[in-house]
Length: 639
Image 1 (tube, rainbow, N blue to C red):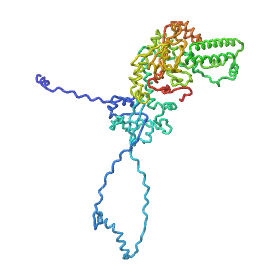
Image 2 (cartoon, rainbow, N blue to C red; image 1 turned 90 degrees about the horizontal axis):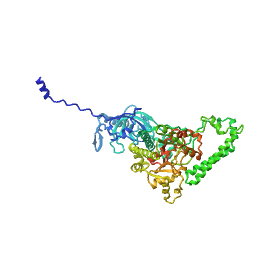
Image 3 (cartoon, rainbow, N blue to C red; image 1 turned 135 degrees about the vertical axis):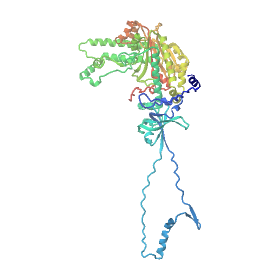
Image 4 (cartoon, rainbow, N blue to C red; image 1 turned 120 degrees about the vertical axis):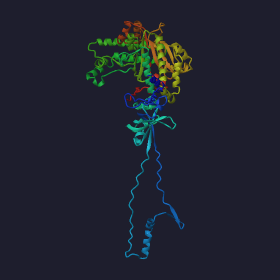
């Protein structure tokens, strides 16, 4: 036993075998067999760690070229026979048989001269066989070099395809879709590509008609691409914009989720008008053709009635009020117009009530239409969901909504579309200062999210669209927002250079020119203006204790203008009812809204963000239609 222990003590300790080196691999997409290019090209090593790996990749051809292969030199044949000179003449070194065959014609000529032979020599001239036309030489072999992109990142992958796998004529046109299996290789030639894929198998080719494909033309302007909305995501510019838009969408949900908000989907079809705007899309199912002949007669009889004339006048006066709110008109003119509108509405209601009491009075065209339509009352596509969110905030604490909002505005503006994304927030037990802080935090969080998660796209945006785009986002994070009251904003505008567009009277709404001057020139950054005159805000905004201003605010951005509006809502039912009467808001349509004040009222505040304008700010573009996937505007709805 002792000898065994000694033997064990003196035996060498076994060394464990080295672990096999980790193989650097990239997994294919979970829902397809291909590898997403972003997982290869956006690695820290540019994909060099994957050289030698066999992959399946797919994408669309961004650019292409064909190069001919070098044809190898012909292999040299046997050496020609040696030559020698006889009597100064050069002769080939030939055999005796070859020499005799070359002298036969000479012997025949001698025999003919001396009459040799009993038979005359017959001479025949025979035409040689006709040689066929030589066929054209086959084209030299070639390699097609494709830069393909699958939309997952800015960079493209270089793919080499031998002409034995596919005809270059099928692969070369821009926009061709290919699915290729091959091996990643290092590119030795210096250039923008460090790796490439040598194709070994072509799995799919989606051909393109070069003459009719719109992206066959190089560098189309963005406004021209709006006529081909189905193809414009294939451009690198629009793809980068959509990456940034997607990142902002995710940032929005992340911010509110992390801060305890509940997402609520507000209705797209509504019977209430949150902003008192006449520019709404009506929801109607019945067409004019479905109206019977009898109903058409009723409509004709109703036309021209005194109540209709009064209502028409009220509509014109309502337009005047809206115009005064948008322009720099003075406070007195707006108040007078509102009082005139109120009297006209009251007169219309009085005359209409009288006519209904008449025996056999015909049914009005509006009543006839909505009594037979899908909804029994007038409905619209929603302009804002703030009012609906209040009911959930007053039960769940803090909520938000994210979705499309609609406005039938025919104004030609680069900051306006008929359908735009809106982020809307409502917080119970909060006042104006609280919701202003929330809006500030949300916007800064979104800007940081883009910088952290869209580095390559932002580099491309800075290179192609706006060099200052990244600096503009950084500046939002590096300094606090400027917060001024409406009166302070008016005083700042009065100090602006003598310009008619900058003139403003106290009480008037701030115009687009005012907003641009404050954000771009005066403060050179985001600006929050609060405590607006109560005549310039919607009816539901809380009136301040001074009796002249209301607890509303707006945020302005450089190059964009107004992109966020917010307010503290009026929780006092007596003051809210009074405001509704002053504005001519039909109280019967808002009974559900007033119930929130009758039963368990609470102070609450919220804001609305024009999401598309936030994308516009990040990218430096000037037209909101360039950042909306399928923009709708006046007379424009292509697909």
